[in-house]
Structure formats: structure tokens, C-alpha cells
Image (cartoon, rainbow, N blue to C red; front, top):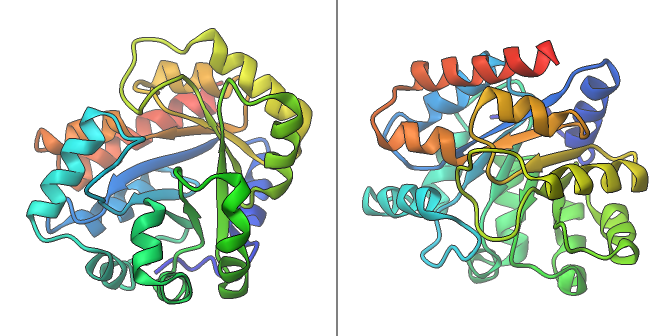
Amino acid sequence: MSTVTGFGALETHLRARRDAGRKLLVPYVTGGLGADWPEVVRAFADGGADAIEIGIPFSDPVMDGPTIQEASEAALREGANLGAILDALRGVDAGVPLVVMTYVNLVFRNGYERFAAEAVAAGVNGVILPDLPMEELDEWEPTATEAGMETVLLASPLTPDERLAVLCERSRGFVYGVNLLGVTGERTSVAQMSIDLAKRLKATTDRPAIMGFGISTPDQARAAAEHSDGVVVASALMRRRLDGASPEELGEDVAALRTALDAG
């Protein structure tokens, strides 16, 4: 369970680290991928993560690229489900905030109040629901807030300035900047549109702006963080996991990303 608790704790934690001069690092793990997946969470924290994103597998992951889809399908075959993932998190003392990512249909089916209460009880600080439009946020956000869960919103390179301002105001924890158009996945370089979006986010809000989608290497992480507050790294880590990397090896990968970010 995360030892960072209470509504606002995710954003407070990230702001404090950012304001101390640190670039933020949020690695991703697919919940239920391997019996030892909670050890990956601990290894990420030991490797220098500032928060950890945990994917809850869903059968129709519209935002996920081939690697995360493959990881989700493998986890589902191994019997992963929402309840089992939250139960496992109760035993994880990561020491940094935990953010779950899933799709709103799963949350709706489980019941908004039940999902929020059970997730917070398991030590979850925030949630990313990429298919929940901002216009429908009022159906979910009050329940999340009452339970103590921060809802992170995503901004894309095509988000107009007026909408971006509202999105940044309504997001909690941090604003998740989408580096590219399309689904998640590994890329060979950080696109100019990522740099442009990061600059727009920083000009719009003081809330931590963290860039994700397509960041695969320490050099790319450093480049993406140059104009933002930090990065999310997902597909590259899950490709290593699918290829058999141990929690310790994945922790070393995160440590390499941490070193690159610290080097500036």
C-alpha cells in the first residue's frame, strides 16, 4: 500500500519533488502480469520512481498500443482482475503515490462508489480514465474526490488552448501530456509536437505536467522532460517484462531513466 495518503497527496508529493528541482519519473506496470508483479512496483520505487502507474487490464483497450495490449491480454489469461490487483496492492509499501489506469466501462460496471472506495483502501492515490470525456467528468469526479482519489486528465497536441485551460484546471494530481497522435507505444525519437505541447502546458498551469506515450529510452526521457516536469514510461518497460525481465532488472531500467533525468 502507498504510504502517501489523503486527497491531494499525489499532487502535493509531485509538486514538492518538482519544486526541489527534480524531474518526475512515472513508470508503468500492467497489474497481474506475472505472479511477482507487485515486486515490480517495489523495484520501480527503489529505482527512483516519483509515482507509479498501474494498468488494470481491460478487454477493449482503445488507447493502448500493441505492447500494452499484449501485456493486458497476458495478464487476463493469468487471471488478473480488478479485485485481485487491488488486493495485491494492499501488501505493497511503495513509499510513493500509486495511480491506476483503466477504462471507464470497468469502473462503471464495478460501481463508481465501490471502485473509488476499494482503490483508495488499497493505497491508490489517483486514476487515469483515458476514455472518459471531460464533459462527462461530473458523473465520476465527485465520487472520486469524496473517496480521496485524484483524477488525472490527458491533454493531446490537438487540444485547443481554451479547452486546454479548462482541462488543466480540472485535472488533479498532474496533467498527462500525450506526446503523439495515436496509441501508446515505443518510438525512436521525441516529436516536435511533444515539445510544443509541453511548452503550452507549462504556460497554462502550475500543476505538474508529465509527458507520456512513446518514451522508450533514457535519452528520450531526458529530451521529453526538458520542457516539461517529467515523463511516463510504459511500453518499453512492458516489452522488457514480456520478454522475461525480472523485477530487479526492470528496477535497473528505471534507475537508468532516473540517472538520465537527473543528469538533465
